[in-house]
Image (cartoon, rainbow, N blue to C red):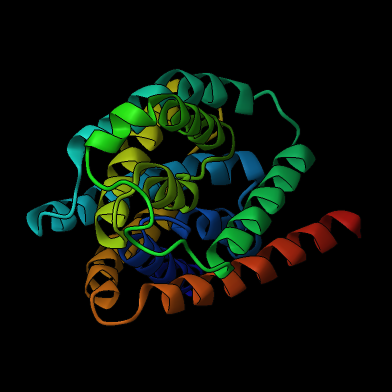
Length: 254
């Protein structure tokens, strides 16, 4: 019973982050699965992908209904990450747990720093789909990197996608969040398919309530994003991520 309640609470936090910010939730999901629910790093990465896929797809529907998804931009990011995500998913099963944990900690710390730092002002860069043509190389490079991170570590990469969409492509924050969810969902699906032959089992008794709570909370996160300043939301989740990264590094050192 306690495990199910813990999964529900953790899922709610992950869903809020993904729904409100378009990223950051999966970086919280992995350590929650490891330290609160007893998963191994490899099992946590696979479970995180399942959770993130369901949550991102649900949140994407809501943002698309509001007209806040730039499909062409998201397609460029997602297409660039397909092969790296698949290769990363295959590689992850061969890596030792300590290395995966270290990778989670580094990614979580980087995500925290990016979320705490103030974003570039909206409109400071060329806006709209035309920017994709002018910044195609940068966008494709970012998409490939995000796909690799998703495949290896089981994190969606939205915490990197949103800043890239704002600063490189020139989208405003709300469309960037919505478009990021498309990239996250596609990367998670590809990485999961690459792991389909993995011997690591999925504990559905934990994953199901975790994912269910995350999916429901993602709707609240979308509404939260329209009522609270984006900078305040990012910084709040960034502080949480920074604490998580520090705790993971301390655990490795002990």
